[in-house]
Amino acid sequence: MRQTTLLVFTLLALPALSYASDCPICESIQEHLSTNFPNTKVQAVNPAPMIGMYEVVMGNNIMYTDQAADLFMVGHIFNPKTNKDLTAERLTNIQRVSFEQLPLEDAIVSGDQGGKKLAIFTDPDCPYCQKLESTLQRLHGVEVYTFLMPLEQLHPDAKRKSNNIWCSSNQHKALIDSMMHHRIIPDKACSNPIERNLQLAQSLGISGTPTLISEKGKIMNGLPKDEQVLLEWLK
Image (cartoon, rainbow, N blue to C red; front, top):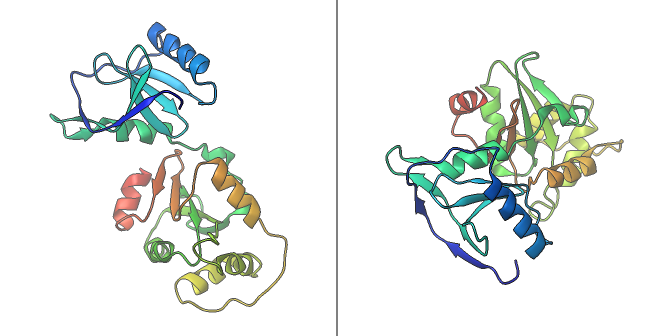
């Protein structure tokens, strides 16, 4: 942002303000930002849980400003009484994906049909993705949709492996063979959704693997500790 100072630090929350839909000051701040920073896309402005401060939602990120909206702060607001990270809670709410809009036909389906739905963006050569597959083997009551997302800049052979997994007659078996048992999946050409998956991930702001999306649209970046933690998160 031009002529804008960014201050980075952690804030302690004062008595919280509720997030309100009727906020004339918020509308004024958003107009000010649109006029003075036309290249900055602001989705929403809300009262922050700190008196005199306002939350500015920019994509999947949150910044804070005052009524003048000329200076910004980047950081997390904590409530020391409850030991809660209020910014993290807000990020969880705004960083959601509409599960119904995911192109599930581009995913490998596994798990228990009719269970809780879980979407995963995975790279066959990603070590944490491979560990996640072991966790999924112990998971029950969950239907899993795996979107192959090879990160070629990190794993040069991942795209070829993803293609071969998708083109296999038994896609999930090929996925397990490749990721858990490190078996070579025979090369095979077919129409596949790999490029679409990469574009989908980019549109959702997903840049790393594994990334998990719950049926309610919550996003988890990285590997859950174990299947119990994952089940609790899915609830």
